[in-house]
Length: 172
Image (cartoon, rainbow, N blue to C red; front, top):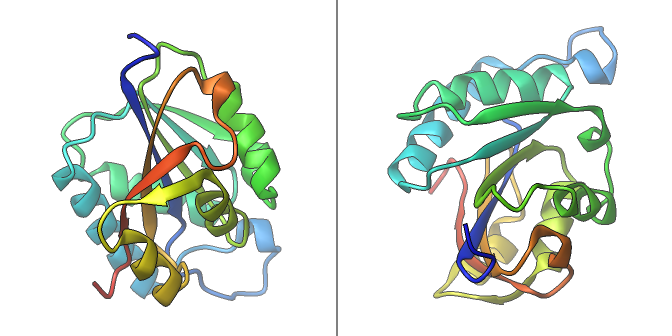
């Protein structure tokens, strides 16, 4: 894989979580969240992006979102459950992506707001079509994802270097 080929990053917010009497880290998905995670997985599968790597928070709701979404994929990418994604700032998420090996072209990151939304906004120096307007208008609801593209090594990923290609939310 050449660093001159465009790379894709999908920043995927976990689906709607429930509020049982457990720690925040252990909150499961609500019924609506289980449905929306599978719908998001089908939408990602329809994008035809062949993911090389998925980075997923260790929180219960992100692991459950990923399990339901990836079930819709034609091929399961290598998955790494990463504690640092839980409660990560956008800078911490970008630093984590900077550690990605350059043989990975397309990476999906399953995490939490406000970090996921802020990372998408910070990385996107430009947007195609109405993707930026849709993301701004919608906020970043549960089960939403942004698709970004950039050229270069993962170490070169920094604010403003990516293009927002698409934004999807369950109500679209």
